[in-house]
Amino acid sequence: MQPDQNPRLSPLPALIFSSRWLQLPLYLGLIVAQAIYVWQFGVELVHLIDQVFLGGHAAEAVANGAVPAEPEKSAEIVIMLIVLGLIDVVMISNLLVMVIVGGYETFVSRLRLHGHPDQPEWLSHVNASVLKVKLAMAIIGISSIHLLKTFIEIGDLGAPGNRFTEAGVMWQTIIHCVFIFSAVGIAWTDKLMHGVSNGKQAH
Image (cartoon, rainbow, N blue to C red; front, top):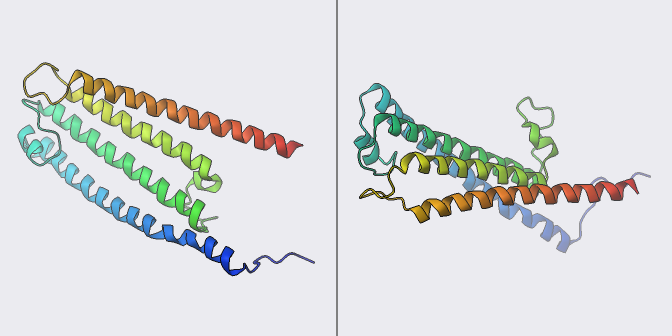
């Protein structure tokens, strides 16, 4: 006699299990955030095209918010900062996709993408631990872009009007290193847990 594939839950367990659907509006909200980032990418791409092909100036990019207000930036620096801004938007968008797709699949309901030609490779073995590691790596990538932008923009720390301070740059670097150590710690803990789990299965 085969066990029931869809056993009926008693009211309280059914209510508790159904509460996972309360997360659905959160993931829908992240989809809206994704659309906003697509719009932001388009705005910054227009700034880049204007800077390269239409004779835009650093002052115009600053006025439009594409780059922070800094005195006397060369066109090359402005273009580099806009490109880094585009990369930053893409990486945050990738992070959103991982959270939306992986989080929904892990905590809410199956997407039933097996056999779909566009199924992400990582989704086939996603779980809470894998998602944590991937998110940590994505955050490190985003932090790296921000740190690189700081190093490009920094110029002379002692110059008048420079918004960067030595302490601020130092703390940004320290926080980036903390992100790296945190990701290593998460990955190491995940590896230990898998080792323990595999050892129990072997017994």
